[in-house]
Structures are given as C-alpha cells and as structure tokens.
Image (cartoon, rainbow, N blue to C red; front, side):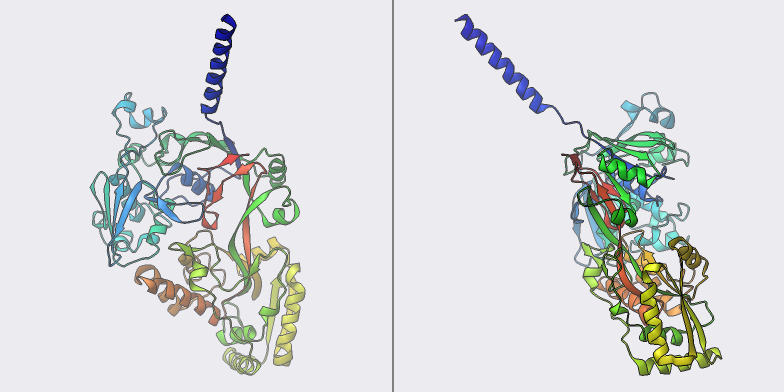
Length: 545
C-alpha cells in the first residue's frame, strides 16, 4: 500500500513538473548588426534605415503591414471609409498603452509618474502626431505624403494654422481624418513612421529632445527601447502589455554596431547574428544559399543616365537620337542584376495594397528607328551649332563591352558626326563622377530609399539636390507637383506612370536592369520580415529553430 501511494505521489510530481515546463515561456533573443547609432528616433522626422527599424518595432500606428505587405489592424481595431473616399473614421482599441520606464522620472519631473501618468494610447495621440508631421516647424522630410489631408499643404507652407488640419479626435477612441482629395494609397501611408502616435504631454516634457536619447523615446509598439549604449548597441525588449492582433515572440532584439561586413558575414554563418542587411557583393561572393536564407527587395534600377547640363546632352533631340539607336533590349543581364527593368520606379515601391510596378505594368520603351534618329541628330547638331559631337560613356567593367557595342550602332548610322568612346571606372569613381556631374552618359543606378513612388519622381525635379541628371523641365515639375498636391483617386496612379513615361520619352534615364538590396538570415532565423524598400525589419513574430 505504501509503495502504491509513493508511486502515485511520484507520478503526480512528475506531471506537475512536466506541465510547469510546458508552460514556461521560451526566451528568444535575436541579434542584428547596424552600422551606426540612429541619429534620431522621432518618428515624424526619422530618415535612416536603423531608425525606421526601431520605429517599426517600438511603435504601433493606426494600421500596420503584415508579412505579406498587406494592411492590417494596428491601434485601430476597425475603420470605415466614406463612399467618396474623403472621410476615414478609425475606432481605436481601448487596451493599448505607452510603455513607462524608470528613466522617465527626470523627464516628467514627477516622482510618482508611474501612478499619475495616463498611459492609454488615445486618438488624441494620433491627432497631435499628424499635426506635428505637417507643421512647418517640425520640418518633416515626408510631410508631403500627407498633403491629401484637408489643409495639410497649406499648414506645411505656413499658410494655415495646424489647428485647421482635417484630423479630429472626437473622443479618446475615435479619430476622424478628412481628406481634400481621395487617395487610394492613404492607408499604406498611415503605416509609415511619419504617422506613428505622439503623446503630447511626454513630447512637451522632453524640451525639444524627443527621440534623441533613451529617456526621450516613448514607445507603444510590440517592443520598447530599453537600452541605448552609444557607439555600441541598442536593445528592444518585448512589451508585455502589447495588445495587437499578433503575439510578440522574441524576448529581446539586440542591435549591435558592427561596420565590418566581413565580420558580419562570419557571425551570420556562425549563427551569432540572426539577420543582417548585406551588400550585393556579399550576396554574390561571400554567402551561399547553404549558409543563409535571403530576402531581396528590388529597390534599384540601373540604366543610361544623361547629364542634361552637358553641352551636347542638354539637347533633347541629341539624347533622343542616341536612345533610338541603342538596342538596350539586347543587352545581356549582368550577374548582379535581378531582372530586366520595365520602368524607372523600382519594384519595391508600393501603391495601396500592391506593388506599384504590378499596378501600372510596363512603361513603353523608345523604339529603334534609324531614319528618325538621324533626323533628330542632324536637328540637334544644328541647334547646338556643331558639325559633330564627342560623346563619352562612363561605366564599370561589367558593362564595358556592351556599351562598346551600342557605340558601334551609333557610329553605323551617324558616321563621322559622332566621336564616341567608353571609359571604364571603378564603382566608387563612377559614383563620384556622377554625383559631381562630371559625365555625359553614365551607366548608373537610382535607388528607392522609401516605398513611395513619388519619392522617386522627386529625384528628377529641378530643385532637388539628388537630381544627378541636372534635368530641368517645367512640364515635368508641374506634373509631379500636381501628383503630390492636386490629383485624386485613380488619377494619381495614372499620372505617376505618365511622369515616368515622360522621363523616358525625353531621354533622361533609360532603365536597363533591376537590382536589389539583401537581408540575410542565419540558418536558425524564422519569421522575420522586412518592410517594402527595406525601410525597416519587423521582429514581432521572429524566432529561432
């Protein structure tokens, strides 16, 4: 009898231990290298990929993007859009909160702030954030993305008070946004860092230092920033109070500063790092599919760039003639290209709930036509007062032979009226020459730093500092401005494509191939995904095998 009782006790104890072990939470720590500290973690002005990665994980907007890049619920549990597409009414969750840290005591100047501070995330936090985003004083680099909101452009231009913005918290849990013009891309825009909430009381307490240090950073997302050691690392910890639709799996995410890509590759192979952005050189030479899994975003397009301030290339007829005689469709795809490019705006750019490139399809290329090209060439030479033109193409070694073939096709038709040559440069020297405008024609890349198509169009406008083409055209500038400030509904997408087509028809940039950035994963990494154009990396469901 005693043995039976003892046996039963032992079995019961074993079961208790077993169930206790099953109930224990798995400790998951993920590590990602970064090249430097973020300059600022204020969502309304943040620009770097590191800052945007932290904001992606430490903040929760009205809506968010899931791992399929689809718009899903964030702080807003539901929303309604009026039939005319001008009024968005968001109903917010009642159980979302800002994460309080001990470090905030000095900032809030309250010894009992843990008990006194109201932590609930409300509609007022979003109203304050969006008004900050378009306020001229904030000087947000992305403010024009909100120009579809009533009075946003006027406020940003200093022509109206921010109190007139079409954003209103009708109560703690209801936010109404009124647009001046319907924008099918508006919900996607609300997923961007620009539109993350901002608690007015905390913001004012920081004394213009919001987001500059750990104690000035206030988080409401699946993670919170819990440690920031300058020039060393940042740590995001799981927010135990997070109430989103997804469970937060990782306990912590470490962002360790490491500028040495060789070291990064080694640590990825050894599973010391969970994931990392890597260069295309590392993708093709240092890592293999057996070492790591990859996610690629086609966020760059290589092509023929024309310097529109050059003596000859400033003439549109000469540029058109050259393009019309260049059989670019016959070029061999270089090893580091991902696919053939059918437009200037990269595939990584999004519009509404889909890829921009998929939404508008291909841009029409300039067709090969010897007779028309010769006519344009003669007209262009006459306009420049020249009998012939000297043309130099700069490129890296991988394009040299193909560019030489293109030159031969020019000379076949244009004969002695063109003197052309190819100059091979290193990648760094080529980039430097293009940046300084020391070229006529260059095989170079444009890269989408964001997922918004109009950001690529702005690169080509007259007053843009990134306009390496020195292209200046009133019609193009006017069209781009109307896309950002005036067009509504489907006309936005239609005219983005028209602007893209204009650049090709005017022979400013001729797309050749798509190129990508790479996010490499260790062999143990699971369920980590990147935002479009690699604007951030989401760790909410990340794990290790």
